[in-house]
Image 1: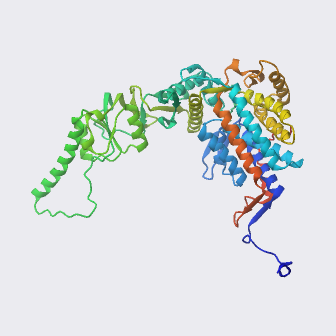
Image 2: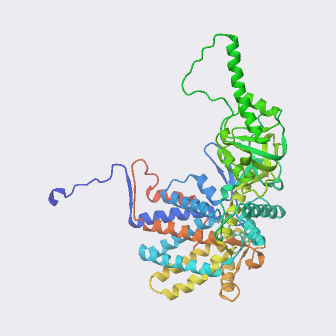
Image 3: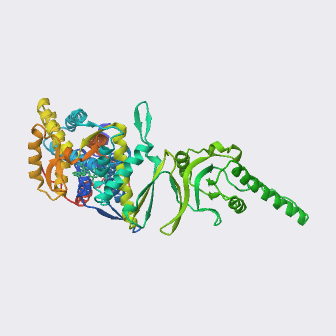
Length: 555
Ligand code: ADP
Ligand code: MG
């Protein structure tokens, strides 16, 4: 039997598939992940640079946001896609710290590559990384500080740091935005069994180019990007009583083709009059509840519009479902699915409803709601690109403040936390000993990438900065020293008020290390036919590597 097979090739995979095995597979994945990390690296921190991304259609995005950059890049290689996943997870879970997590993953993999070269087995490295990650969490637990929802000052600092790296809002406008974000988040936060939860869906972000960043405002209510349906209707209603309708103010068309035979002009007249009466009754019904504003998720017939106008009611039609829900939360109203359901106690309340023309477009502001459970941040800035980056900065800040409130703890930034972790983990490594020690040591060194990069991006000598920082951290009272990027020196981040939510760090470490672990475990990559470009041998990885915007340096 075996004899017959000798010299014969057995094909398991379809022709044209691509397969990379063993160390080669690991090498390629590490190189790709490291290259991706290098791309975002120059953007880290307030002194990081921006990237301009141009899509196939020529759309331009200018940003500093790790998740956005990676998403817009449309990477091909599977390992690169996993790196993009890290950024997305981080974005979803905490809304900030995306660049940090991707950089950490790249560094963990690079260091693992060095260990593999020293013939240390991947499973030993993974075991060491496991120990280090667990220990890192314990250390973080100890070095973090508690923050309550009432500590607005600390929360504002957290918001400012999260926004800090985006190139919008310097100085006073950044403080203004930070205050705005904290007000918004604390307002929609819900308390359940002594813990706070923030559904950031409840903070709507609307944006319009025109004006300047200082014109950005917090609306105690909702902004609807629609106009009032009828020109005769009031454009401004004070003490608004708002009907929220999820039913059309129209005569329903029958499902089947029904024919009505009309034999005389009188009959025609009567038929039209009947239709008109139905619409009038609808409006009468709404008016009888005392409503002076109507938001309708469906259509409003011209005739109904006319009657509403006669009653002096302000009406808006075809409002998005998500906006209807926000209106309900902001005004305390209830959405009625049929007019029969509508009663005066279902009406929402708002101080004012106004139609305003913003940058040539009409929008309806539902404002001054009393203790609204949904608010809107209306972002303004000179051009579309700036507005979009402003939005991303505000989203990051909302994410950071939300996690600080939910988790209730924060740490110091500027690379101080990473360096403290690094120093403590290095000590822990010597306690563990054995081959795992080397992996824990590598984990510790990987964390230094954060202060190192912040220093580089601030134009400092990174080696000097790291040496000085390590010295500080080894002494009593030096645990909060990090990179003061604005003065290009090292400083106590606690004194400077550079605060970040603890969850940004725990999540960044967790997702970086999970991804590194996953890529390290792979020793066989099989790409089916037609998809060979992804795992295209060493050439493919080399190509990705040369895409890197810099080098992480060897240390
Ligand atoms: P990420 O996508 O990881 O959030 P950022 O570009 O937002 O990346 O940079 C975050 C890093 O910048 C954090 O390590 C944070 O501590 C640091 N940072 C932010 N503001 C300051 C500051 N004023 N001084 C020093 N470091 C800062
Ligand atoms: Mg950030």
